[in-house]
Image (cartoon, rainbow, N blue to C red; front, side, top):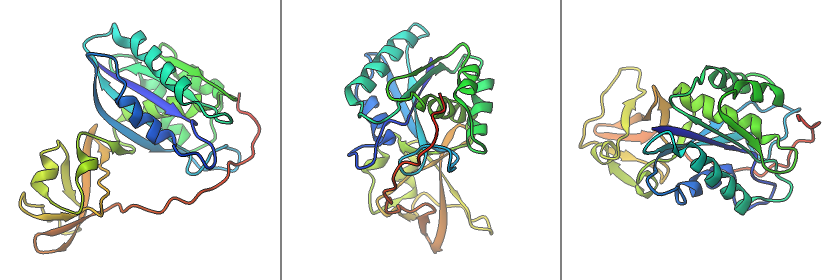
Length: 249
């Protein structure tokens, strides 16, 4: 059975790790019998009344488990993970749901979090029947954690920050090598060229597929015959202070 584990608001200014890294670390401590499918970063609304460290993003770890009985095991493992990596001053939230759950409320909540300011009460209502909990500070991270699960379940939002061996691919690689990792490549050229298996892709050391139709898809733009470049390039992360705002709890 597939489970979604959402994390948010786990970092502070100047920390050596953010929510994305913490989510990727969770892949390394999964309970026996569980396999990670991928880790997806979601961009939420940036607004003066929403506290955030740099980009107001949350992350979801997608996990394949033997059966439904692993729900509580994964919840406890995720709670322990947050306890071990909690940073004073952060407001971590955790959301855990199964693919078989009724996720319509979480999907609507996730979409709302990309468009407007959302209150904690709305997150709790959206997560009815699923697990949602705060683990420090104001516990405001429950809003983004629930959004991460909802947007991942929706299947048309976010980018993969963890998927198989993609982070090990560097420099210039072939389309076939990327496809071998289970990632579909798609040209965003207006003339609709189709990348060939032997074509080369300049990755810039940064392959981050999008979540499209519930699958990892890497958009490419053509540079010349048999040569492509990933659409998204790594940007230098600007360190911003958290926006002062009233508690949402």
